[in-house]
Structures are given as C-alpha cells and as structure tokens.
Image (cartoon, rainbow, N blue to C red; front, side, top):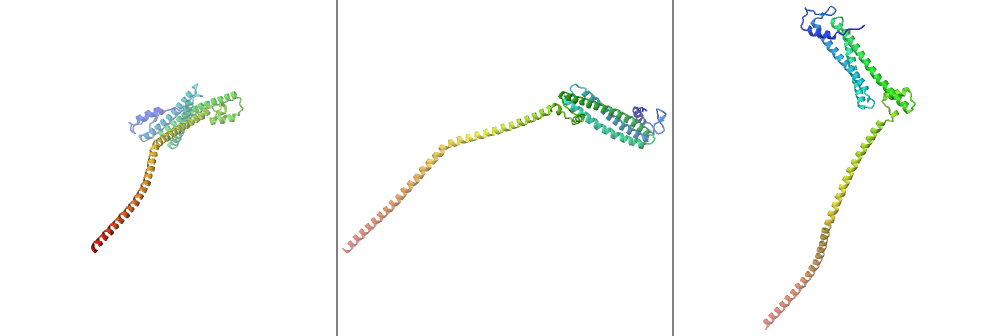
Length: 293
C-alpha cells in the first residue's frame, strides 16, 4: 500500500488557516475539515520537523550521488584526494543517518500520543512517507558502498593473481577491512613516506651539524684573535719585566750605596767629634797656661 505525500498541500493549508476562525472550517481533500486554530501550532511544528528530516534525507541522497560520481572517476584508485573525499562523505552520511533515526523516533512517539485528531493523522502520514524515503535513501547508500567494496575486492584478487600469492577469502576480507594492501604492493607509499621522513630527519641533523660547525669556526677565530693579542702584548710584558729587573738591581745598588753613606756618615761624625775634643782640650790647655802665667 502506497501513501500519498500531502506535505506541500498541508504546508499550503497551514499557512492559509492562520487567517481563519474556529467558525470557518476549511475543507481538505477527502471531505475532511481543518482542525481548530488551537491545533494549528502543533501541525506547524510537525511540518517543520518533517521538513528538517526531509532535508537530512536529501543530504544523504546528494552524498550518495557524489560518492557515485567520485568512484566513476578513472583516477579514483590512484588519487588519494578523491578517496579521502569519499571517506568524508561516507562519514557525513553516517552522522546524518543517526540524526534522521533520532528524528523518526521522535515522530513515532508523536504518532503514538497524537490520537485520532487531524494532527495525529498528519503525523502518521508524514511519518510513513518520511520513513519510506529514508529507507530508499539508505538502501541506495548501502548499495553504493557495497559496489565500492566489491570493486576493491576485485582489485585485490587481481593483485593476488599478478603476484602469484596464495591467500584465503577471509584473509582478503581482513586486509580489505584494515585498508592494508602492503602485502601485495610492498607498501611502496608507506616506504616512500618513511624514506621522506628519514630524509627530513637527516636534513635536520645536517642543519644542526652546520650550525655546530659554524659555532666551532667562530670559537676558533676567537682563539686566533686571542693568540694575536697575546703575541702583541708579549713585547710589552717583556719590557715591563726588563724594567722591573732593572728597578730591582737599582734598588739593591741603592741599598748598598745607602749603607756606604751611613758608614761614611758615622766615620765623619767620629772624626768631627774627635776634632772638637782636640780643639777643646787645646783651648783649655792654652787657657790654663795663660791663667797660671
């Protein structure tokens, strides 16, 4: 049994019913009448919720079409950008599907609690149509994903034939689920990435060594400059040492001369004292002679 989608008609009726009163019922297809204005708000909320759910379902449909177009590209299996784009679309579709499931559960709860009023009939009708649309979109999405998986599985079997390997279907499924094909193509991309990483590390070490070498060169230049300065000041140091030795010798000679002067001074004092005593004695003798004569 098929259900007619009356969402556009209900949207038109709900927008025009706001201008009418309770005493002016509006006829709907099949002889039904529009419920009183007290239920207009409830119907409007149902329509908004259904529209939001339909928009999510349309997003899933568009993502499925986009996945189909990307997979039909001849360079899909060698273009990592397209593969990442497909993965992001699948992730987005899964997230949107969870939102649709939650909205359908809420709509189902509304159907159970709506009763037999006009809002209840509208809710049950929209729930049935929306669930059918979601089921069709989900079935198409799963069909496209299964096609992707089957095609990838065929590629793996072709690689098995080319490499003359013996592998069971279960092992092939596990490799397909783990997205690991290094068993067949020796993981050239991974090895290339590792080689690039090693090259990048070697370049970093080379830069470090270059900086260390430059620092050592600067230190060597500093020591050379210091050696030149020491050599230039060596003459001044020698001159200072020479004059220091000369001063030492002069001091020793001056000490000797001072000692000689001290001795000479003492001798001169003694001679002077003796001369004074002689003169004094002579003067006294002469004075005594003069006195007694």
